Image 1 (cartoon, rainbow, N blue to C red):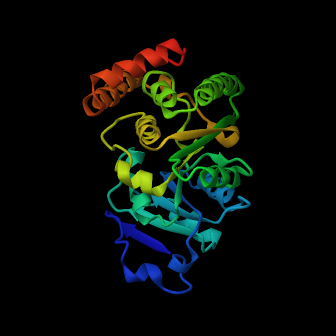
Image 2 (cartoon, rainbow, N blue to C red):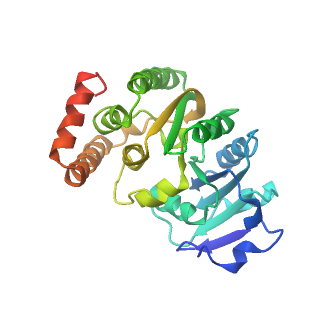
Length: 293
């Protein structure tokens, strides 16, 4: 099914409930995989296939095409898989994946949501492991696992392996404390513990949070997961979650470091305003005391 839209489809739209259609409500999937894509049809197909190939979980894949030329349409048509749904954004966001991801959430039907980037690959068995974790803890909001970089630039891959190896070490340290506060502090004040594609969330929690913040120029995924962890708690699965494709370092782009600083100032300022100065400073001290910052 192909949809061209600049607004989410209504959840009571009868066209979404035709027997035998790709969105038959009688066959609700375990996981809705939302893939925001822009001008990467080749890696997009690899990403989508990695989700479709997961054993032990039923999935639907919602591809939101955020490219001006809707370059993903032909690639998705060639899949011929009824589990995959294509959505074209008539008003492309100009590089703000938060917009496309939020559109996908509005169309999702699964109890769990996975925001998969269009150049990443889901690790074998990850969905089944996440389903077990959520089943064990009905109150749990977020699950994420370890990240394995891959690509062609060996020097950059080694750098990223060291980074995500340290991130996993910090996540284990947070997990030993057994509560969400250490994870929240680590996300708020330290290097991120995960990338967008590494986590799964309950759809009800995503809706309660209002989705991603399209106003953040960078780290909208860090902001989103930090809020989600604070809201619904988190479990770290100490196993591969994601094969993370490494390309040219974006940090070398002019002005990016300043944008990164401004984005963190915005998300920290909003947290302080919403949760209060006392909680904000307590988490700051916690992050420093545990070596998470």
